[in-house]
Amino acid sequence: DGGITQSPKYLFRKEGQNVTLSCEQNLNHDAMYWYRQDPGQGLRLIYYSQIVNDFQKGDIAEGYSVSREKKESFPLTVTSAQKNPTAFYLCASSGTTLGETQYFGPGTRLLVL
Amino acid sequence: QKEVEQDPGPLSVPEGAIVSLNCTYSNSAFQYFMWYRQYSRKGPELLMYTYSSGNKEDGRFTAQVDKSSKYISLFIRDSQPSDSATYLCAMDRNQAGTALIFGKGTTLSVSS
Image (cartoon, rainbow over all chains, first blue to last red):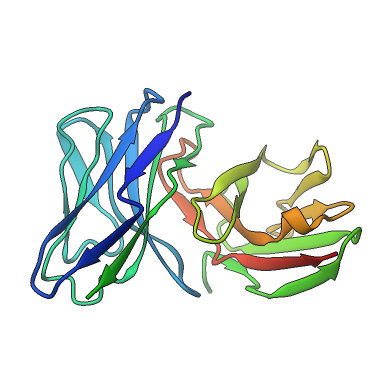
């Protein structure tokens, strides 16, 4: 089955700790995205990548970092600089041609201890 | 004015009701419009995808786009408790799926 997987489902972060969220897709999509979802805030774009070894900041990139070493994988690191990391994190992927749209993974809920 | 506006609700209806969910937008260049359904603690799933103005029907769901009014709607006929979810509208800034802008979502509850 083609799809997007995210792991872990729940993640706990201690103060001052960096944590990495995994996102893998087997849809052969060129583009991948990370969103943050908070209650009442909708989806806010953190980072996106349209091609391997290249990525761009979204609307709320501060305190986050990404890499795109493989087409299938787009891990997100929440660094200690992100002071309010508690949220639901969603990974998505899409093609890059006319008429494409985004498909989402199941999400990772990050909580701060 | 925000690019996309969506009433967060919550919207509560009895089973079997017709539900109307709506979004307005400000950018007349938008051509592609989407509705996603998101169950609690799950990722959004694509429900309807339409291009330009007009209607698109899929089972109990109808998506409607009125570009002249910058208004999109999702109608759910014969609503079921399983339709209880948050519905997100989305629009594509660049027509290639790589620059979506989302509404904040409307929470729907269908009671049996």
